Image (cartoon, rainbow, N blue to C red; front, side, top):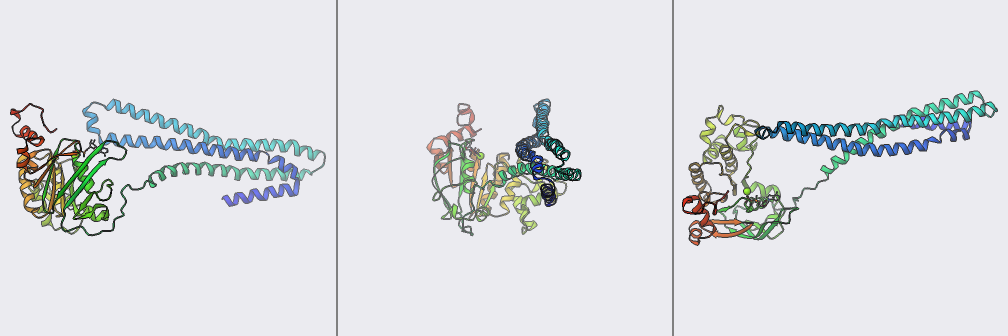
Length: 450
Ligand SMILES: Nc1ncnc2c1ncn2[C@@H]1O[C@H](COP(=O)(O)OP(=O)(O)O)[C@@H](O)[C@H]1O
Ligand SMILES: [Mg+2]
């Protein structure tokens, strides 16, 4: 179509200039530069305004998504009207931006036609004069007019194409913003075998989250021999999750800081590294799938017996068998038909079934009652007897049997040792202990973990 249009224009202009009069042609085409300038200007405006339209559309989608996900919170806090109002505001903004975009994009064709009208008027006055004084024949004049009107169509289409193109460019710019994001964690390592001895060594590790100038971890050093259990305890915000997230390279750490089985963390291929871990994150997540699939996590190769054993060791087998279809029960949207503690235990089973070299439980027992917690810990001691395990907890009871316990506070290791050593020391750990086991004998708030 574009080639067709250009050809029509070229032949028409050639015929006009050659067969009729080049002076008249030049005069008639005088508005063309104006048209080009107008198209360019309007194109730029369409692009900018269409970008705005898309931003507003994205804002609406986000809002709807949030409102649907957070519907219970909204209702619980009687925020329905407020949310409707906010939604309407966004909609108004969307209408406004659309109107402002349409106003410019719709003016393109009339403006082009206006320029051509000027052309025709100039042509009528000048060309008509030429016919009257006999410079050109009436036939030539009619032909000339015919050619001129033939150019109008293609120019209008070019205008329309520019309009569409600019909208496309606006969308493309937004898309590229996403496509151009470089993954922060470069998978540049080459070691593709996870060490059979999953020891963990950390040397003078300090870390601040990107864009934050507060140190989430300061001068953390530790040596966890393979096959041992490390307990980490500390207040919310003391850096426990940060520490284990760094072990899985969720954020970048400099070379020479963390070693797994004696190999620098950064030397591992990312997949190898993460496959070596069984990680139960703090905010565990279940998928809309069967219980068995949630445990095997869509990885084939685990037998039904292995899945059952993982569930048994996580003290969730009985709960699962009580579900309508046992292990084949499909969990509802985001696993809503289970309690927090049950979800946590399924997440633990998911980590256990892999029998990982290093198991990390990030506050994974927080919603489990103390009796069940004790049973799970006992099972862990058995199945993890010769494997490395890291248990993060708020409760002393979850870490007291660990070979080594760290007490984190404000991103620093305040105390370390075994349960017995730490109690004897009479410091922060002791205070937490007193508070959790004999709260009546202490000032109410001292050392309490939130
Ligand atoms: N993604 C993040 N971006 C910026 N700061 C964070 C992020 N996650 C945690 N922090 C900050 O790092 C500190 C340690 O947090 P975290 O490791 O989650 O503590 P814990 O697990 O002990 O409760 C806190 O001050 C927290 O606000
Ligand atoms: Mg945490």
